[in-house]
Length: 94
Image 1 (cartoon, rainbow, N blue to C red):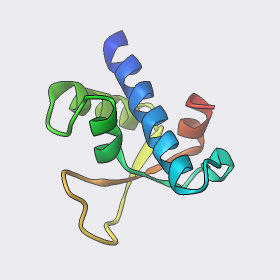
Image 2: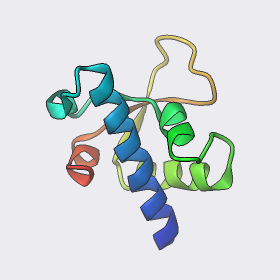
Image 3: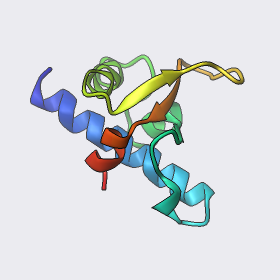
Image 4: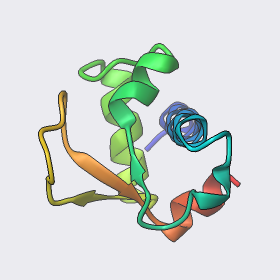
């Protein structure tokens, strides 16, 4: 993967972390391995909506770096898979 995909991926994961923190009283201390990440909302926040090549490349980079892992769906997710952040993903955005 290229440098742009890496930068977009980190921007996407940071946005997902910020969304999580906002939903939990601006507390990102609870953002640990196994936390669900909303990559759809994160993509919209950073101007990289689902379906755009940049978003897809960023998600592929996160998957290839084991920063996120696909989880079994517990509910319908609009626009794609349901992901959990891994310990490595947490470290990347710390």
